[in-house]
Length: 178
Image (cartoon, rainbow, N blue to C red; front, top):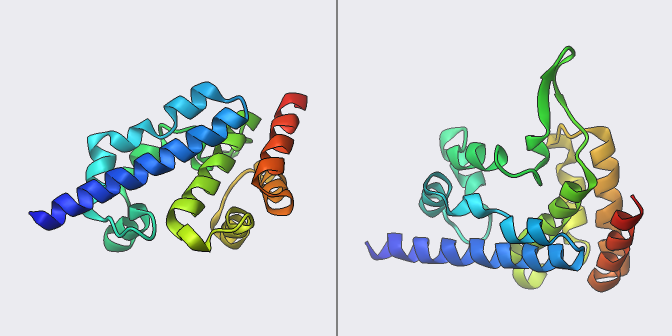
């Protein structure tokens, strides 16, 4: 019982820390509603309980659940309710099941999400290049729309090349101009 309470408490702490960081970054970009609503589904029973069961503390429990079961019920629930995930932006069309370009405001929230996740899981090893490097290293596993890839790469490079403060200022300017 102690072990499950330990995992539940620490998972709650992890997702809340992540959510608050994303909220802070979204607010810097003027995305107030998105910041407030970001990842609320992580507190739903299906996502929270799978997160507790597969909690490790150094990476997303989604990855551990996928390794153990071959899929993640928590992830399937999450990606279908959160527009800041590229996996949300797929549809059946006359050309089959295809990626759709994400709107800029959700790409910006995805940037905030990736930076916050990098900080939460990497802790002291985090650098301004961490989220960019994670994105580039995982592109081979990504079936994202080409325009979304281009914009994500560009916006993450603003943080990598200019630091967090200046990078977020430039991203906000980009959003205002587009």
